[in-house]
Length: 414
Ligand code: ATP
Ligand code: MG
Image (cartoon, rainbow, N blue to C red; front, side, top):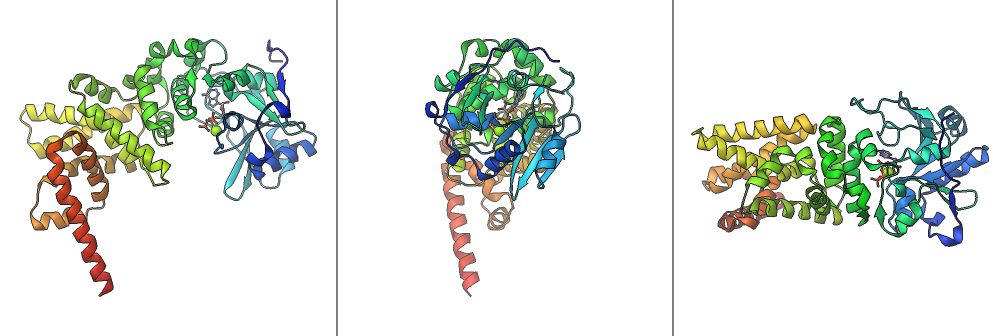
């Protein structure tokens, strides 16, 4: 029997909290009622409860239960079991999936039971546990609240309700130990604080900088996923500023961090922040974003530094560009597993930049027709924001696009 010294929960009654069934997806409600009708406990848990209490519409709904995955499958026809080391039930409603996890203890720190590579740390077995065990193995107090469908109460084992009300992110347990178990919690702290506009509690923030080097031991594929959540979820700029503040940048983007430090006048940082702002604005406007452009922005300082170094050694410019791009990519992917389908277009965005200075007619047509033209042009715009001498290039290519667009229209109508 796992032993937990957890006090009885604080139970927040329906009339005292703002969670309404109207804001819970019908699919999640079906799962909660289905479990209850079959005689099991079922709670809405994690980010969804936190977001609802904070007045944000959750993007997905997770359920925790005392039923085993096999028992969950027996309740729902539309259910499949996933995961090997720790089994989870997915109840599928069209495009929406409700993840149902059996209460468990001693999490190895890879999120809601997702199978991830063992990265050498905390290889305890995942075992089923009580709801109390399930609460304390979670990361932040605000992520450990349970909404019960039977009586519409919220159960709080770790003080998360007060923390949501105070808009504060606080790790459950001893912060340094929790970061050691799973260094990705450092990034989750930054990301959730940026997303929710919460502060990070002093004791949770204090060890962050010292723990940062541990991120080098986290699986690079997981760090890529986490980087996408950090920078492509609409809060890239505040996330980046918090990474700087807590000195996490060198662990995540070592060469970019070094290049930014070495670059005295700060224009590269200004450009990077402008790129993140425009990413956030695109997401707010419902426009598509891609890791290729994002990483072109994030790693540009590193690329510029490497390029300058090679050119100072007298390497031919065209050769130096490709070599700088390859080196920066190689080094970065040792830390963050940026897939080639993103790193190749990222490199193309960089390599196209010098071609904006060339205006011969044939070259103009070729560049306009390049599949990466638009991304490269948007990147030129970011560069021009800190380099006024690029204004004429920018104007030329803006007009070239407009003309090409008008010609295409004439062709289409003819
Ligand atoms: P988001 O809004 O990004 O979905 P989230 O908190 O729901 O935020 P998930 O990755 O979906 O994040 O995780 C769901 C829940 O699983 C969390 O709320 C938390 O309770 C738990 N969890 C996730 N990652 C960890 C971790 N590294 N360590 C401990 N618990 C975690
Ligand atoms: Mg979630």
